[in-house]
Length: 179
Length: 216
Image (cartoon, rainbow over all chains, first blue to last red; front, side):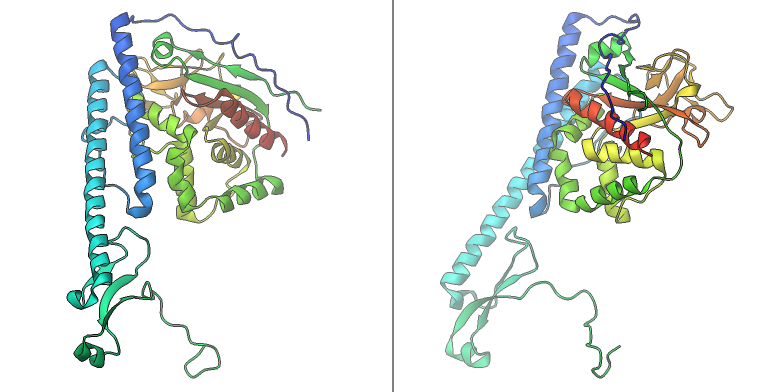
């Protein structure tokens, strides 16, 4: 295989055509500041999405203003609008995440109480999803030994065995009804 | 030994350069005969295909290079949640289809470059170009292509242009007459570098792509 040789003529060939419009230095600074803010907000939004994804993700609202669908230089007003919109989306996403966190905390406390005193929380359930954990497990207060436990007041917390089957049960070959 | 690959930086319109000082259009010319991919390239494609999974696709947002392109998309008025950045689009396609299927030497080399580096690389037929390539806003009345079916370009749309006319929309399709065809013998590869993307990544994308094309 032929070796690739770097013969970059990077700086030399960057000729810049004459500018058609001049932007005032103050506006240029404002645009730079807005650009930096937009970059920070976009990164925070992405970070929030990635970190919250295993726990169900965040419901960040869609962009309120429809983009034109092609790349162009944005005006100062458009940049401000974009910054405000991203800030609003981030705020809503954070609020949603906080609300979900509080809800999960409540469910965790409920599970703690169920574990401490199962008899006071008969047949109550808390799912792993409500706790923000993965899987389909459900914690449930059930009587030991069925009816006997129910009559004797023997209650305990059981964790169900996971997600229900989504496909038909396979039958081993050779058995009656097998393939 | 074949001729070395030469890397050139395209010109950037002054207004655009003032707005995005780190914006860069790196290009490289490479000779190749478009056709089916060689087994080596197909194997590489399978390898990157096997490495991609859902968790990785989600984590792309946190990676510096895709994240830098997302920011740039925002700054030029594109919504990266609707118009995905190329590396995210490639990851999504992989998840939907189940693997990267070979679509031909040039397409595979471009795909490999974007998946490996996060930097999108585009190719046009060098024989159709007039002068060096650069980035500028489209002027009033300009069209993408020459035929009667060529598309109108809204004034101000950022385009990759040669000395004569726009040849491709930025991060978009190229004009049909500049597209790579089976008759093309020399291609001009283009990669757009934005703030937050190290120059090394841009160069690696171009050289990786050129190497894949020349190895055929």
